[in-house]
Length: 95
Image (tube, rainbow, N blue to C red):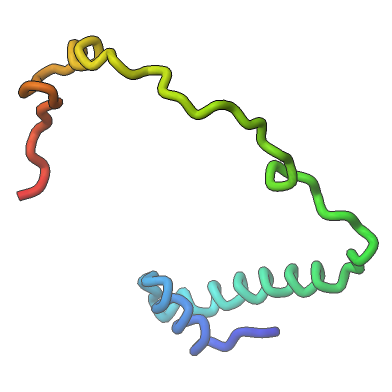
């Protein structure tokens, strides 16, 4: 598969990348090289290769769902630089 300059400009526009006209041929060559590597990978026969194992295939250990850090509100709020009652006070960031 080979990309033409119009397709390269469209990809740049979709990716919101400013592209000067002088950069189009260079980017076209780079994208065509990447697509060539992908075509080489597609030629490999991987039918007899088992997929890599990862955390998705592992069963997670289950534990009882219970609160272990509750009841220490005052200790947590003692670290606040400023507080209002039971809440942290932070600077306003949205106007």
